[in-house]
Length: 193
Image 1 (tube, rainbow, N blue to C red):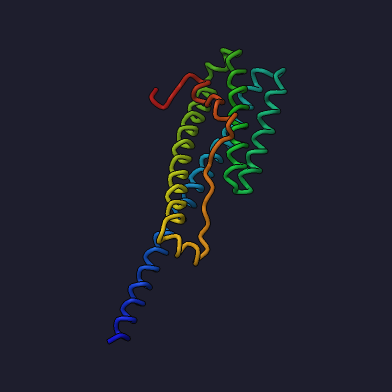
Image 2: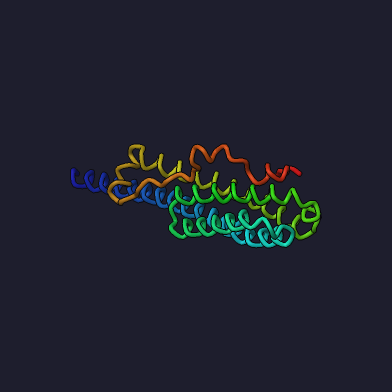
């Protein structure tokens, strides 16, 4: 009789451990999926930058410093993305967004440029990308919050520690970068237009 109870308790503990482990795996996979979504949107933004630089360069050949700065910021952002570290990526992306802001402000000095269909299409795509990136960041940070909460709460923390689950890092900007204007704001647009 005691052996039967012991076996039943062990089976219940095993099933419970499997259920908790599977929930942790699901939470970790959501974090990875969220990070991949951010990566996709960042790549989309990085692909737009050279096109915007070329469009502005055609109209403002003497504004080379801003164009070179934006190109360098794009390279740094891609390097940070290659490392796959959320904090490094966030800092590099904030710097790139500020550089894009300067580029778009430069475009304000060239009404003919702003009127071209190509430039308008590129800026619309950039605004859309920024909106999608914002959504991807929110999803990722929500998934990180859920995973970290599971890892920290009893009884899930027992299984997490036994199986080597680690907390994920939030995708957040530096304090000074939080006040940097978004690209949509610089363009005077939002996704509600």
